[in-house]
Image 1 (cartoon, rainbow, N blue to C red):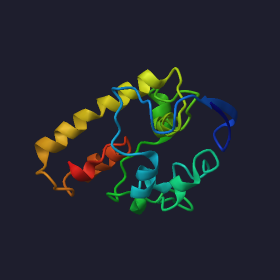
Image 2 (image 1 turned 90 degrees about the vertical axis):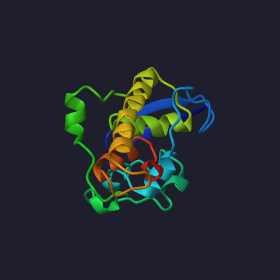
Image 3 (image 1 turned 180 degrees about the vertical axis):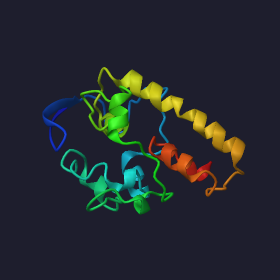
Image 4 (image 1 turned 60 degrees about the horizontal axis):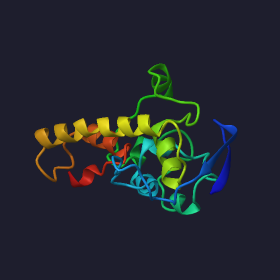
Length: 166
């Protein structure tokens, strides 16, 4: 077990314990197609999501990551479209919990690193609910037609689904 203390713009002094091996012992219903490092390298969240969290996560995640130096830059997203809602919308809908004030991706990064918490079941349920978008892509697009529905593909990429292969 390893203890982590977080001090970034959104959390000061938040601590958690990593109890599972890195990248292993996931809930059997949670099978993401991409690791957090792969997501960051492909381009997600306009490159802005993790710019002040580099001390919390492995340095290798940020080598080759598409990160914005200023405001979010949609050209850094893999499909070069905006597929995000503002954090204020997420808060209003009750999707943000105090453990992970940045939302699902922050939860996933910490889960991947080995943290397990009371919010895991809810977050995995939310991840599974995104599958409906895969069915929509498969209905509307020909296989391998990656330019079809780029916003929906980028949104799925934000949830660790590799839409380049759908």
